[in-house]
Image (cartoon, rainbow, N blue to C red; front, side):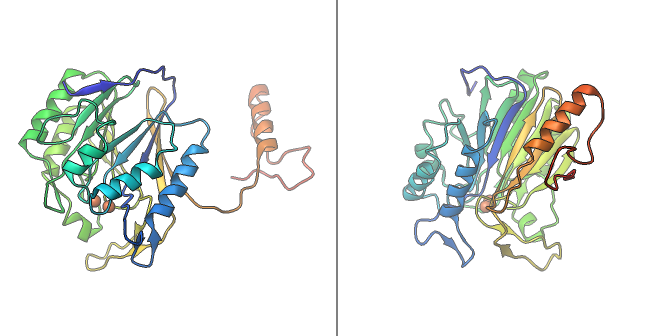
Length: 306
Ligand SMILES: [Fe+2]
Ligand SMILES: [Fe+2]
């Protein structure tokens, strides 16, 4: 079995962060005139480092570099080096297997077969399965017989353990047509595997550069925004655009029964501190008084913000 364990005590809730589609470039760093992807990843890392509570693990769901060169992987690793959280990577269509494997050999301890970089991580309350459906030399993905046999096998081994699969290509039609046309061949077979293994509570992917959710069987399926540029929300089949909406990431919270997925927008705007209001909400929850319209002692306008 190609898996490795995390030797730490993880308590509920489990917080699983996800970054995706970082597209680190080594020339100017810019994508068109839109985004300096190194600068935006650095901003996301600062954001992740400021979180409380700290996530237990970070999934990096592919297209971590733009061309898969050694220099770009070195830049990526440098940019995430300040994270004190285990990072589990899986490649996307902009990555290159050989350099990916070399760059992440410390993160892929007993990585899977020669045919694909898929692996299992035990040791968290949720089983984590990285699924690599990259097709070398092509821009679309493929879920082939080998993937199907491997995934079905590892899921059959632990049918009662809640499981999260992380991969690059989402196995559904999003309506972003030009991306769907270069999506995952064999997605119907992956969906079939999910439907036969209801312990898969969540599948997370990237590639679409937007936050998107759907359901397959009893599995919540979520796509993470990019840490660089997003794609425009354009559902006309003949249109498409890249936009400079802010970088983002997702935080998947497992409470032992359900996953809740939060999408974080990494912006640097104004923050109004609501600590007094929060304290009042807690006090009233303890006494059964109900939620306040406004903080009764506040000299400011700290009314109920939501
Ligand atoms: Fe991408
Ligand atoms: Fe991609």
